[in-house]
Image 1 (cartoon, rainbow, N blue to C red):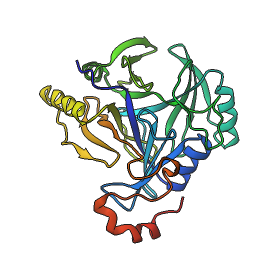
Image 2: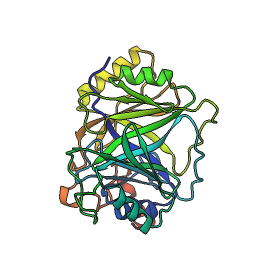
Image 3: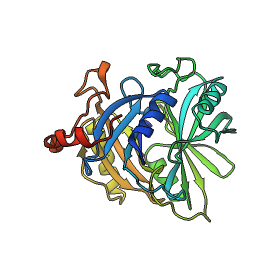
Length: 308
């Protein structure tokens, strides 16, 4: 069993409109845009990152807003719900805030003894806020949400699977432990994690496979401290039979990817070097940052990318 993984690093999804996406995460959810860059493989498409003040691993939601992309079809083989941690007693505030911003499809329930507010993003993305006691991660309060209510980072992610068995075994190999079962959902947690510690596996054997599109999670990333730990994880996964990519430089972290038995794309990402490697912390996410191979496109991209 591995011990290098410390919880979630980031979750990356797809959207249909960059400005709408940016407004939702900054104005509605109160997160900070910590990086404005472009898709490595499609430089005419933004890659937007939202999180806490510095984009701490375990807090960062990222998006590829492909203009006019069709909406995804929910199903199995995907991350169905991305869950954020908020302070105890704050769900009423969030229900009122989301409703005032026009999000009226709200549902309050309880899972594993935790109160939860379920809602949808602009493209039908599945989200929830969970009240967590004593989550001491620092909150970003620069977008109008006070510290008593602000999002602390991820709490968990829920994967919808035809059969959870093989994925559960993979996660246990990655260092997760089963902590509970309820209503057909298995909860796995990482001991000594970064606060973004849980993965919930929901078995849905009669549901068709998801089709990716706007509102779909493209991949989910797990955090390791550095490149040395990442290489240890890569070797262990390959020795177990997984087809893992070479290490890829993503400017703000190094990444490896592999497809899980349940169909979800996993990434292992390093905590280093971080989002302040090319911007002062005070100005994160303001300027358009380009990967080296796309630097020659700056004039074109600054003219044609949608203004945020």
